Length: 335
Image (tube, rainbow, N blue to C red; front, side):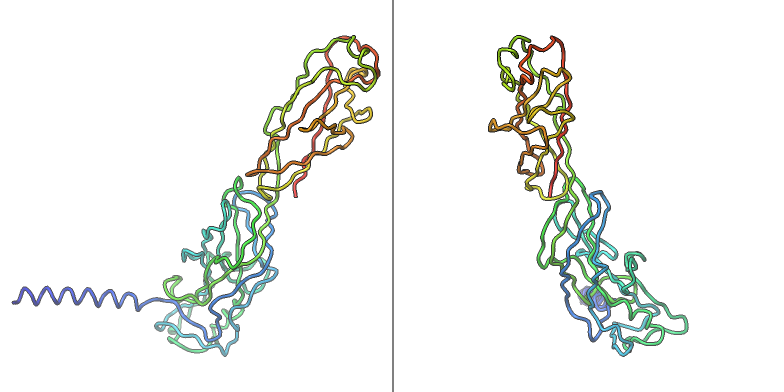
């Protein structure tokens, strides 16, 4: 019988210990704090690079009164009090909330001063007392008034992978939480949960991912005289231009503008003045070398744009045999 009593006593003590640990959460409440706020704001990154961030510091959202008459309630008296922002994983100062591939987020608190927020201080802004603990409940006055200005919510967005980050529109997306706590911990009920609705814009950039040199087939000098001024000579070379874009919309429509240093009508004039090159699109239509344009739609941020380059008789004369060359510039614009 003694052995059974001892076993029951140990089990009961373990049960009480678990309940006590849960009761010692450090989060506090404020009478006027709203349970959640939604930040309606556009977030425009200035650069598409890993670690780049953007916030709504120009339009923070108030989530409690900030008054010294405000009443707080904590689990117990304490020497310190902090106001903290977290991500959706309750990491103080964290920004691991998944928004979309390449973009993460977290919540923070500001006092309204530009570039001053809880992330600046590791996730929390706090105050400590040396003469005695703050009571478990009371008003936000005396030394606690230093916290009163910290009543505005921010959402921070970060680029975690610049190769994946794209424009996105979100609606009531949870980004993080805000806590009033006595020990720099987010282990109880938050003051406020922060949501965001709006557009996130990532600057776009594109690059040529294919060979930039086009080799035209050999032709005979006499064919140019036979063809006559402005006529094509042969079938030319078809060479798709592979474009890869980062940022922006992964399905955006891009424009390619064609220019060169010397033209004859719509054709490129080469280093041999009797020989030109005509640029054709995928449908066989002429793309003017004098700022002509072609549109293409990205798929997952990439597209192959078909171009055909055909020799043209510029003057109708037989050109001097030999090599010729020209430079074509293609400028890509993406919304």
